[in-house]
Image 1 (cartoon, rainbow, N blue to C red):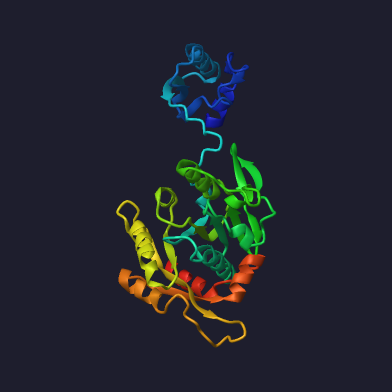
Image 2 (cartoon, rainbow, N blue to C red; image 1 turned 90 degrees about the vertical axis):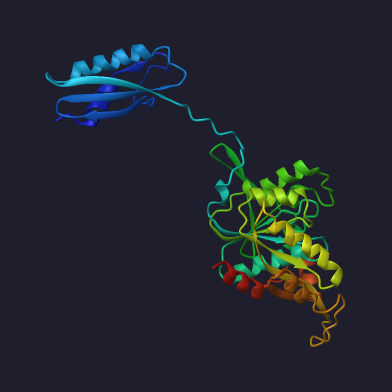
Length: 344
């Protein structure tokens, strides 16, 4: 009985004069081989742009079958036209590096100065303490603070090449993988980028990174609700977001902007809830005292106003500020526990 392997062996005798005399099997031109007791059929596959030696190759294939087939067994050669696969562009960004990430969570704020990065870093550390595999992408292109907060500002990510694409290797510290545009700017350098450049840099900080397997990828988003934010949310498969605010009444308008952006018909991302930062001040010398410098109860009022959950109230504690400045940040374990419950 003739086998498919027998036929492929015969076809290795058919050489392509225009391809360094390589055989048609090696060149992937044999699309299919069908074998029965009375007939052997070979399908030759040619690109849409006709090979000038195609008739020669078809004839040579028929001749190879005639030479080897026993009497009474018919040999047939059929042809097909295949579309050539478009070559992958070098460094073409895609979602491939996010395939191993279970949850992508944004940490956002309507304006700057509310401690959004402090919350993002603390959340990432809290998740890592609870045994999760965590990464954080610092997407605040105008004021990247994650390198300083994690004590990694004098370190640069590595680069590896996979499938013709350069990938950044995130830094690892405290059990978290960190990536920030701040790693690529010298200390004190202002990043003067227009919208399209900022969008491109943002996507690189997320899509061109070898994240590997992660339970959570936290994205520290830029403050505000402009074109950069909309582009980021639309192009990254973000599951939802946490909105950070301070408790005073004037912050209500900024929270409303953030809520409306995520609830927009063209975005429609889940809002897990609100985090009230700087909820009160507690002096280190008097740990039981609370001073409501920015007002009291604002986070609860905002959560009610927008039908959201108040996830956490974080006090203005000196140790949290000192930890962020020294590169030894505080883990927000209770907030992390709540997020795990909301995403599972």
